[in-house]
Image 1: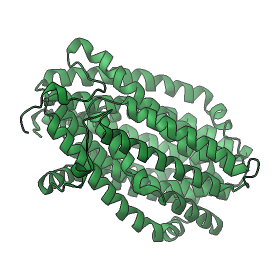
Image 2: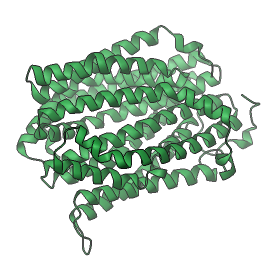
Image 3: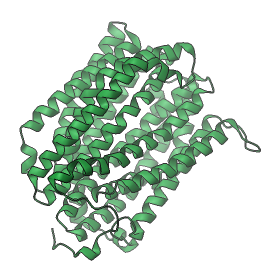
Image 4: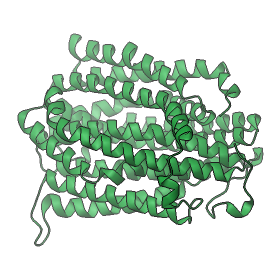
Length: 462
């Protein structure tokens, strides 16, 4: 790193006070906006599912599920770059090296825009073959391809928004990504409601209306994030010349650091594709019920995600400031929060799973299956709480490999074979699918906790 910049170069955004007494306050300060952001981000696709569910069309709901699957695969690759950006910015910020933080941010934006061009160009022609490969019905393939391609139109800025939010999180600002996502969500809800069913002179476009609304909201979010970062009002000011300046060594280092996280994302998504093929084999009704149950359970991922973000930033900034003992205490505090909140949500799922599923207004058969799945999902909450916080902590320290190993083992030793065994071989259907995933989450949490306790993450130097 270069010499620390003077305090005048800092952003006017939130600044963390890195002391033991401030750890609970810092966790809440970082986690609450991140939870709200992820909740709102999930609501973009959740809104589509809710509205399409009202159409009483299982093929359209399956199209959202399968089309969204491949878009989420693309999102996860950008999340890998975002995680690396957050880690490097957090370390530089904690060390007071704001010039390096600015350079990392600028190069991350450039990489994200270039990568978005490649990913969008690759997914456009592949949309139909991918959905056919997933075993979707002919109508679901047609609708799903349209859904994916409509959203890809605006992905040149929609995908990089993920990385831009990572820049802000690394500096300790989780509030701005939350506000951007709030604006996106309001835009999506209003447009989707108007375009799916038709309002006034607007025709009822059905699934196409939901796709247009999502595409427009993603474009808006990307533009807002880019303008805020470049203006210097939420981060160190980054000019267009900074973004266009190609720093080969820094980019190569960032890409190398991102590879394990990208590999983890690809492993997870490949496993998920195989997993979804098993769900599809159970039947279209089960697939629709699974999508509803996933959307209900995704609400519990929000606190886990927020606390993972908090742990990444706090560990990164603490280690950057050469305070490893503060990093360890931050992890312990964040873990206590995570277990308490997600444990409580597990109780809610166990008691009121069918009632939560019924909010999606599908057919009685679909809702009955979804309600049972949500109740089984209650078993996953404590393992997920452990997994998310430890994975976030390790990434904040610069250890991107250990979470990848846990994902690799969980996906191919537990999730894929057990889901197939329980759902198809034993004939347990969707209940078998969710029991298999519960075993998978538990195994991953146990493995990553064991690797974390070995303490190798404390010795990493970025």
